[in-house]
Image (cartoon, rainbow, N blue to C red; front, side, top):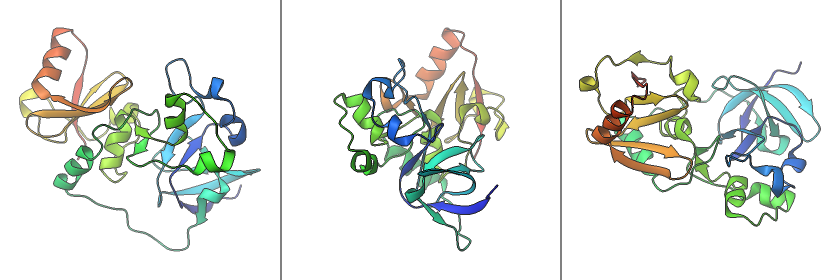
Length: 231
């Protein structure tokens, strides 16, 4: 077991398989029927730190403290960590601005950055024809928990399931304040301010809606939900 400390050196993706060239060569199997990249675990941003546990040909198997299982990352997208680095810390106002900066971005399963990359296009000579596949190969988009993860500077839990036990429970909807999160099964909405919620959904990408409308819809349709304060 290697356990070398590393940093991600560019926007990239962690896969659940070491066979990168195979993943990026077949448009027909790139996405699931739901439109999720079949082999993606999560998008990784420059500066993220992890530990190499194994080497697999052109990639490393790496553990990250913020993700529940190891992922495979191309070797060229990794640098050895030589000194300690400080994790970015944002004020609530800065987090709100980072959330707003993502408006209009598409939905991407595993996505947690507002930027995109052509690194995989160049390396694997990708020739995808369909828009969804092209966007996914460029890591263009964010999923619901990835939106929060990005906006907070990667300080919150990465997955919705982990967010369900994160922070503290808000007992009453009258107590909701900006940056609280509204959780339903497999989805998280972020309270942007006193009036608006921001979220990322499969068919809409990142968009705004009214807090009262979201809560009314959940209550009317008897959809179980919880509100948590994670910041």
